[in-house]
Image (cartoon, rainbow, N blue to C red):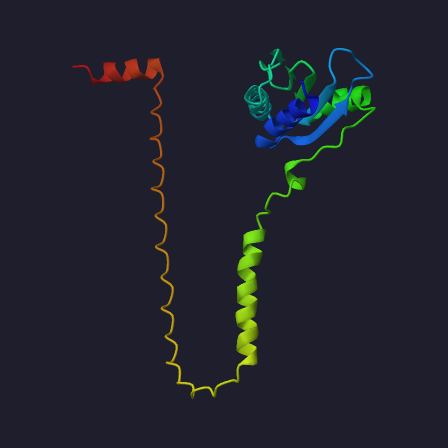
Amino acid sequence: MDIRKLQRAIVDGLEDVKAQNIRVFNTEHLSPLFERVIVASGTSNRQTKALAASVRDAVKAAGFAVLRTEGEDNGEWIIVDCGAAVAHIMQPTIREYYHLEEIWGDKPVALKTAATKGLPKASAPAAKKAAPAKKAAAAKKAAPAKKAAPAKKAAPAKKAAPAKKAAPAKKAAPAKKAAPAKKAAPAKKATAARKSRAP
């Protein structure tokens, strides 16, 4: 088994889903269990899960086996065990806390990433388009200048219509006042009034 091909497959899987801060360490002298530790960061649970799935797919496509994946339930720290190489995909806070680089980082492996592979930059096509424009501008300067035609009088500018005033806001209807409560007459006076009215 070629460890460099396995390492490349893992790193390609990480780069496909925009992993951050990818580090590869040679661990042959530290552990007989695996030869490489690859540490990468994802910004969210969703991204770390997508990174792990991408690594599994890339490794299988390269003809290698994925032995085990752990930590996909919560997505903060996912370990993809590929036999001779182990990928640790972590969120930045978890990575900062455990700092695996101190444990496995004695021998970092030089790594060619997508940025150093010579892939075209997004601004390259724009630069190619700008070159003909520069040539055209230079040709215009070199050509003798023609006399400009007399300028036409510009039509007078139209006056802008006055801004319409906003309709005044409707006033809220005044709140109704509650009718004053009638006071009950004392019981004695009421009975006296009834007696005086009786025939």
